[in-house]
Image (cartoon, rainbow over all chains, first blue to last red; front, side, top):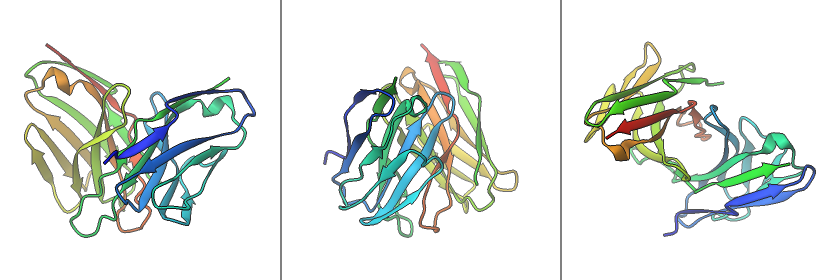
Length: 116
Length: 114
């Protein structure tokens, strides 16, 4: 298994540009999520999905859109990039987690985004 | 919503010493407390977790303790080794709501001096 993959690894955008950060997992996990990581602030939840066709907002959703058409893929779209969106973005996935099964979230390697 | 505070922000220990990282949470509904280790240039990786019906859990050199009354939990690493150097994050979540969102602390950079 490749686990959770993210592309691109690095990206530079100009203010106002749009782009999509790709995330894919091959573990048949139902739960997927996007976090952003900023210095001194830990990771903050942007959007999450509990299964194909179902998405919801996290703590910091403004300026981002998501969709979940398949179990494997969960892309994150920046509609009009702003310097405040400069950050490292992590995608994560997790199994259904019933009973004593682990609720571990598996993180991808991240995408470092700079908006100038 | 949930708020998780983590201390210290940086911690330097000598190889072989113990390291302790502490977190407090605000939402009494939180019932799942994982710890993640993040190495440079990589995504966080789960190292240990604990649920609210357990007070302590150990896995080799790593242990986590939970005090529900005081709403705080701690990570203990014994016999530290240079490969333990990384950033450690605590987190809290409310399982059973379907949301399973993790609220993270701000992180602790652990440096183990050889």
